[in-house]
Image 1: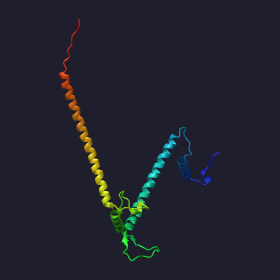
Image 2 (image 1 turned 90 degrees about the horizontal axis):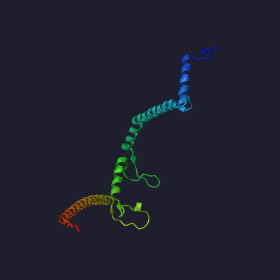
Image 3 (image 1 turned 180 degrees about the vertical axis):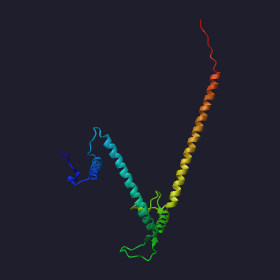
Image 4 (image 1 turned 135 degrees about the vertical axis):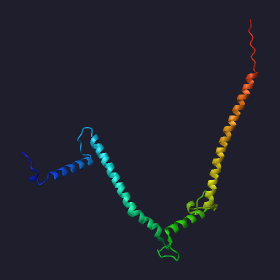
Length: 190
């Protein structure tokens, strides 16, 4: 018995498209075991998944570059921050742009008083807080201390290597002199 596609209400192109769609779906879902090792379908599935991932990543990046990032840049440039009281009412203080606010906070952070461990009163927590210096002074002092210690460590390492080399050379010379002074006296007793 011969099957006529027209009786089924399909054209040859419809049938081909359905077969391709179903095969692609089975390969992507991992339900097709056409060969014994599965290497062909695994390879095809892996390549298709990689291509799909690349296409999705490229599309997301393009959308972010075109629509999201310009909006974020605009927000950083134009957003205005207004200080308020505990009820959300604006205080009589000038509103700041985000960049002005970050700059102000960085300055306050560097001028903040810290203890000998470099912690502010808030970072220290409860208990007695002994002011030592400002954060910027503490950070510079710590950087200089680290730099001096590292430099001294390297200088000592170089000096020790030179001293060891010098001592070794002196010992070799002295041993050579001693060996030169030793004159063995061999006598044969009869």
